Figure 1: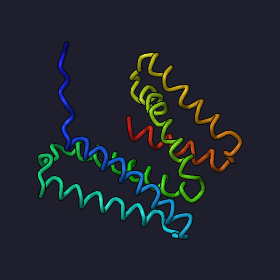
Figure 2: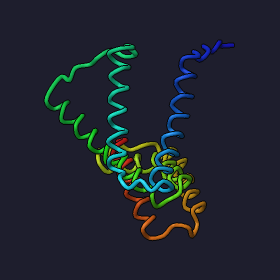
Figure 3: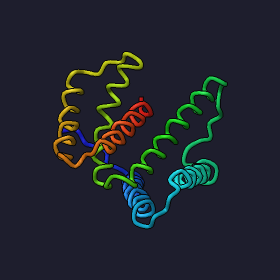
Figure 4: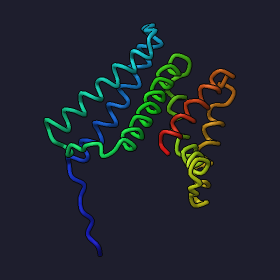
Length: 172
């Protein structure tokens, strides 16, 4: 019988911290944008990105969780910039959508991201996944559509598609 290595407590702590902070950020964004009446989702995204930059700097330079990596070429720098713009746009769209859709629907949309990522990977780079991958992702999308039922208005459907398309392109 093969002995499995136990998962280190630090890994468990980081995953729990990531999970809890994601829930906290999502609920706080929803509260600020919908309940509190904060009308600046792009400024909220700026605060989010500034905090990410600060904590990344602390993690890399102060705590040294991972080594500092230099950009090797102009081409690599341009790819990083492109990814940054797409990611920022995705966060802005997600923050704006919280004004119009419930958090549960936002999370349901997020559950379909792997399906759209696989589709965009094929469209953009002709990288084909195994058919079993598409087969296992399709019920998730169908489940989201069924669970959403008649609660999706035309505007929310557009939010749904734009959010997923941006997230899928970001993940490719």
